[in-house]
Length: 453
Image (tube, rainbow, N blue to C red; front, side, top):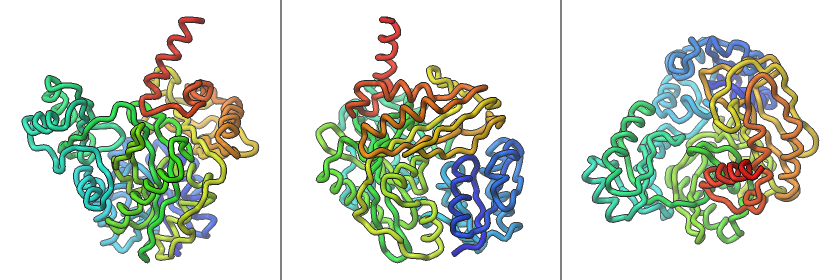
């Protein structure tokens, strides 16, 4: 087992990794920007090292500074968390060259699955269903026009190196292709340094269902069930739950088998996620693979009774998987992302949290780095906490979510707590009748209700 781990991240995920390390008697090193010197992950770690100014480009994304911090502190491994350098194959390679452990999949796997066009090819070769689309990155607008006509509209343009909804555009007709291709490619170039694009058939109202997979260095690869992630805005997830009400046992087994087949095809090691689109006729299609721990990993932890972060540390140290395949869900779990945003306009709301009261009680878990009087910096992701609730069934989980959100008090900034309260009161959500279009339809229902009142 590692003796000292450097966490190349910030916020709640850095704190979560520190907690797992403490249980395994591993010392921790927190890197931080000048804006994060008062963050909890810095004070909870055994050591803290400042690696630059507030801009993530000059701190958390500076590979040389992170590696220098690891060497200076004597860390024998680095955990990247999610975001920042978590899916940077070059970073993983440099760590290996420096003799520092990498708590994640092999660099070649990250590179292979990080290229969305290549990931499609791998999925096809593994026998995993994919949406009709381009096999290789698109070379020109003319090529896009021809392929879109062959597939049929609507289609969606996606950045080969993309994620988080950036470099992604829906195209309804041929007249839109030239401008949308140019805009998406330029956005991808700015965000990822790679403007190459690929194209897929666009499903108007699918569900977004992902499977947690895990592999070790001994050839073992398993999945730990699904997470329903359809409640999202602009491709950013807001709420996740498990099990999905859309899956019966037969469909769950087929999707889980496909996820494992794809992971085995790339000799996957450590934690990862296979994301699928699920059509209303039961057809499912590979969308992408996230070669890291996910924001919503607590959903799987709570519903399956496992600790994924501790397992990451064990597996990266060379241990075999400590849990077996075929684990069964324990009740129902919902995770709410609490963001420092206005609940209606979604505008960021950085600033001081003058009051913070966190809920508790049966079936309630909070993952956060926030505390009263903490100042939310304007430089990073707006998420300040994850509220996770578990019940014996979905109805009890919703009831516990209502109770916990009512007791979640934040003053001084806006948060999305009230938005989640309204979602839980929404009848289609309560029925489990929704797709990735949920938020679009939900906003319309809210507007109509406000007019009537």
